[in-house]
Length: 328
Image (tube, rainbow, N blue to C red; front, side, top):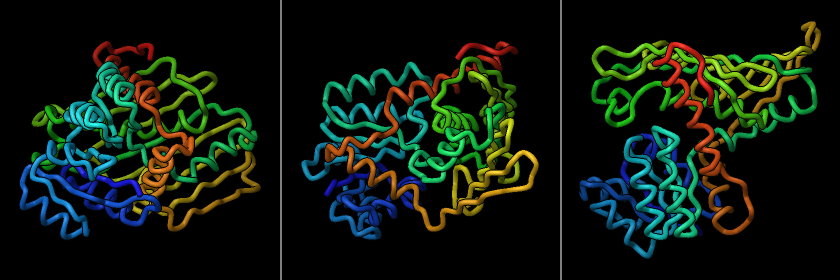
């Protein structure tokens, strides 16, 4: 059993990751840390974890912890991923791993130095709907892929929320702009060549609240918008010469809609739908991580892939500043 320690009681940990770990094969939640020891004890009791730690450092020093999940604010991900790796722990760090691609280098160095497994927590990578989309595209079901179009939005104008705090790494692109990019890269196996973005920032927070983005790939274009102050919506469509694929709930299956993918032919005479009921992508992520640590050869989202994905986000910001497309 892989004994997990959780660095903080962040919402994503409480509502998604810890419940998934409790159900995951080969995983056990051994301890939870908080800078408030009473809070750590409360969370440990709630989730049935045997150990509570009054500091992150104490959890990392514990010989009873094998792996650490880092759901801290984005601006602190690199720091604690490095500290956890240097403590000899395997590390699953919430996305986005970093705010700039160059910032990932110390994490790679710590991983290699300690000989541990470190991965960015892109749970969507483990959802089987993406294997189906990849299969359909590779089989030529939609002919030649020419365009990918997407959207991801929610409404949150709470000034106390870290997504609206620039110094903690808030903003639409870091929080959700990473998803259309990673999904497109995943199903096509291709990397973006150039990127363009138009960004609107909140006058109070300074964070990007609306980003309209384009990425040029070999043979097709990805275009999407992400927003933190629009009505909730998410969609991703892969459009080819012979048909198109729609993904109903590309990123938060079960929250925005049920997971289903639809393949339509060019003349709208035939459509195939595959549904994925009851899939917990957070549980699948935890189980894949545990198998990888155990030496199964399981392929995770590597730190090198994290660099490639973050380079696209970096390019969006650079493009918005320059007012023109920039190389990725």
